[in-house]
Length: 232
Image 1: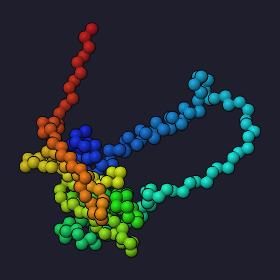
Image 2 (image 1 turned 120 degrees about the horizontal axis):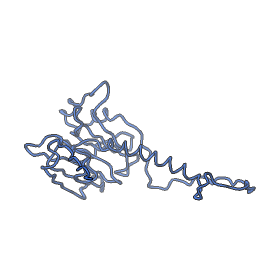
Image 3 (image 1 turned 135 degrees about the vertical axis):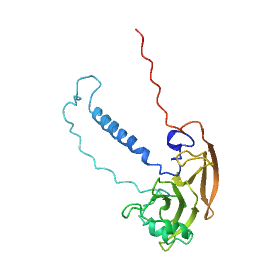
């Protein structure tokens, strides 16, 4: 897919697909590097193995200081909600979307849910992305804000093919893949990336980026060139 092959903005994850799957391998490699770093921290630079610490010190152990209070304006706890019930009870979600929202396998619905600070409400805001079962292409993005009574209200909705919303440092970033008449789902012609910011009780567009993709690259499966053999 385009977004995973380095084209377009770094925020995109292909044609409406979830962006987190590609990070799994990177997380495993980072964990291994961290373990190696901790192991080396106990070694000296003199090449003699473990460090020679000398005799144990006799200074009294000091009491740990109490943790400081969490400053105001930091991230709020994110109470988990049922995104399926939230979408099904939302009057702003079209009836067609509600009728099509069914489990892919068992009780697993094609929904991604993100929690974060977007509207500075009383609790974490909720971003719900509804996708197709077959190829995980986004078809609807919704943002919910907690009301004073604890319920959630819809403050943003985008129902269009290949759409996906994410939280980026307090902004709502919505990526929509653009398809031409002959484009396949895997290879769109481009993408629109729109950034929204909450102000005066509504989301306002603050930035828009359009990327056109190279149609000559990636449309066919190719073979890697064979490296030349060294001559004696």
